[in-house]
Length: 267
Length: 283
Image 1 (cartoon, one colour):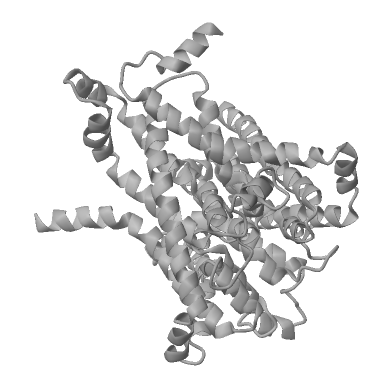
Image 2: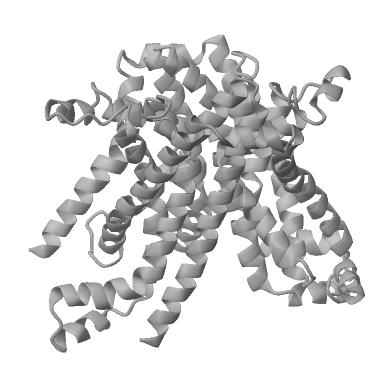
């Protein structure tokens, strides 16, 4: 009896707190039917926002993957003074408010920033332009690849790498053929987490973007403009698309597991 | 000192190739993307003179916003502890039907982009929302107030509590509870002394993570908050307002306080956790 009341209580809580929000997104997007929802997505400003989000996400993921692999290599295969400090530094963006993560780039490149005015004169626009959005997104997503790789590569130890070295392999060969194949699943998971976070980043990007529709508005910023402009259907359609993309990235992390299970069944 | 520098340059004696290249890239990247922005954050507020900084911190609107952020994040984290414990318990011990689906749904607040959570929660709890409308009839107004802020922060922080408690609960031997019952413990004694006590460090960690996240949260809160100065304005929003007024000193002062508090909260949590787990081991 007690068990049943626990089940009911848990599921009521899950439905009210966790299941209702995504249901609201879908219901609000489709309130006037599927056609208006799809039409609102193909509005020029909407398309520009989708495109910019894809661009920023691609750049951030690529940059942080290269950095993440090299940083994880240094942090796990060597023991040097300052190693733990470096580890703390890399994880720092996780505990910084998104708004502050955007603000720091204005302090460097904004109108009243340290180098903003000089760069502006040279014709290089960073704040309130796409490069600023990219900097803020890279900052926010910097820890994810490192964080997923470090525990796994730590566990691997370095025996295999040392054996490869004695057999005459160079750095890139060892990294590419010895270390990364064993860390493939973790790397995949880290890249997908970075992707999901990069697409959805709002606070940091909002501070540096300048909100120019069609120019510096990513999908989350465009959702805000639409919502504040009482274009509810358009806002929630864009929200449904963005949430779908982000959740797909998060769910895909289990794909290697599914694949392994499927292969097992085939064999 | 010299030895440390040499060891740093040589990778602590490991002969694996690639150390300098990988270290160089890592240092350059963290230097540009983390150290440099942090330096700007720490140095910039003092640049207009100490007087300007002191003036910037003598701002009642700022104190009100910080208080709103801290108290809401604290309340949301406190409320999340029993809820998170219940969910973790149901997932690990409750033989919950549909456990896999429930398990996947727990991470939803983390996967949902904050702007999406923001407009969704504002709609759901708003005066015409699925939950807001019936509750408004009962006289409970949730959206556009402090209550709304707390609700949004609870949504965002819940996974942190569940996910820190879950693994510890999994490792807790089930027969301990049975043994306690056999030894004559009453149900509440089993709960407080056998179940909660070993989970305390995890609960504190979950609380701390949820609080630290809540203090700085922006996207999921601003749509439901109402954003009235002195009443329902959170500190991150005031930073944005100050930036729009080109008041960099004011914005940076708030940012610095926010950053230091969330770091302090995380350090405190790790200290408390260490204390509690020593206590737990001695018993």
